[in-house]
Image (cartoon, rainbow, N blue to C red):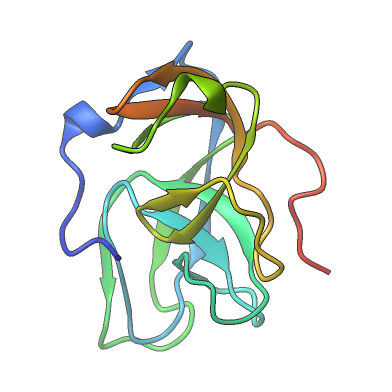
Length: 144
């Protein structure tokens, strides 16, 4: 499943306020919603996470950007990187603590490794049946 609208502020939580923002060019014909997990496609442009081809996980979009009518790089998106961020996830279990987390869509977490995208982070806090916090400060997230 993919986002159809931006996430509300209650789902944009972070622990400790760490991390940094980067601005990166958005892919052509792409809409990114606030709170979406984003990646760099094979051409280096930002798009919502999908599992259709090798991509590199970048972080969480801090704003909505509509480049649906634009060319590659016509607009930029602000991305939060290297932070401990909240992920809404009704399947969250206490046993997920310490595990790596991946995304299969811009709002769909999984514990199953995916050969097409690097891990997003490590689960550092669990709200059972509600969501998890992931530490996105991990090494070797890139897909080769």
